Amino acid sequence: MRKKIDTLLDSRLFFIILSIVAAFMIWLWVVNAVNPNQVRTLTFHIQHEGLGVLEDYNLRLAANSPATVSLQVDASVADMNRLEQNPYIVLDVSGIREMGEHDVSFHLAAFNTLFGNVNYRPWPRNPFVSNTDNTLIVRVNRVTGRTMAIETTGISYEVMEAEAGDANYFYVGERLSVYPETLQIDGPKETLDRIATLEVVAEFPVALTETTTEVGTIRAYDHDGELLLPHELEDVIVGTERLNDVTVSVTVAVRMVKNVPLRPVFEYAAGANEENLRYRLSQERIWLMGDGEVLRNIEYLELARIRLDQIDVLDAVRLDIPLPALTEIYDGATYVELEIQILDVEEDTFDIPASRIFFTGLVEGLVAELVIDTLSLVIRGPSEILEQLDVSDISVLVNLTEYEGRLGRLIVESFSVMVGDWEPEVIGAMDLPGQGIIVNIQRDG
Image (cartoon, rainbow, N blue to C red; front, side, top):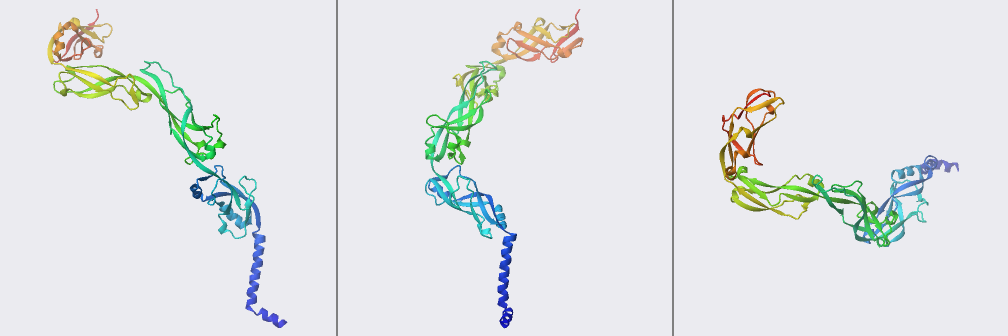
């Protein structure tokens, strides 16, 4: 017997087998003492596979499908740590072909990295948990679509009142617009069939004087006029956005009216300039209607340019009234008639008596007297006016403000000449040519 024992101890195979058994015993001790199993509840994110297949069958996950699920996990400390570092489960829905609730198997995304035997099952306090350890309930809806107009009955606003003539403005109303005007909504057919109208809701908190845009939200009503609650519309979407979260642009375009002058623009040529040009518009002002912000920046409307070298001495031209952006004609006129007359220009000399020469700007206590009896002026203008002009029609105004405090004889080089509403071109003061009017300033009395 001893001989057999000695032979066994001398055997190399014996020591190999003994080493394996010892290693196995040490591993069992480490697993149970150093890395024991434990049971914990972990939260995992759900990764869905096969969603494209659902779309091929006109199906879609319910909008309230959970994004996470809690699992009771029985695993070693090392594997539990790996699961915490990779908290995902994979749920394959590619085998679903009909709407409704389905039990779908799932597996741990970190399965291939685990060392030991891991047991898990969904935490029971969840409406999407099935009765088995590795399946979840998946709710699938059949998708249909509708295009519906958006009604604006839920928009509240006020337009500020203003009277005609108030700073040349008055308000004439408003235009309401929504963008987009329609929505393409998708969702379960039974839910879409309940929706009768879509209404945009928006509030403009202040009285409006200009075009204003706000964000509006969408409400859905059934065929009895009852508001559908958010939880009833969870599966209804617009594109990738839930109907409850959709916003649209609501614009109240306030229209205002302004009385705007019309101005022709002339391109002068030889023999035709401001001195000998007369014109008359059939309508000198126009009422424009449009956006208030635009109208406030319009001082006048510039009509088409007129080249005076291309018209006759007496001519009539029809000009269209240009319209700035966001405006329109309020009083119906779209064009004006322009009558143009080019007059002959001549020069004539007038001796203005002292009684027609007046002073302004004198300091109290001082008086001014002309040293001359008459002032000879050379005036240029249309011959039709010069032929009818008399010295009694001409007034000369001399401003002495810049000579304040001076006494004695002065030469005033600037003065104004008026003939009614016409300010003629004076090309010379012939008394002491080039020197102006000689005035003596002295104390009064």
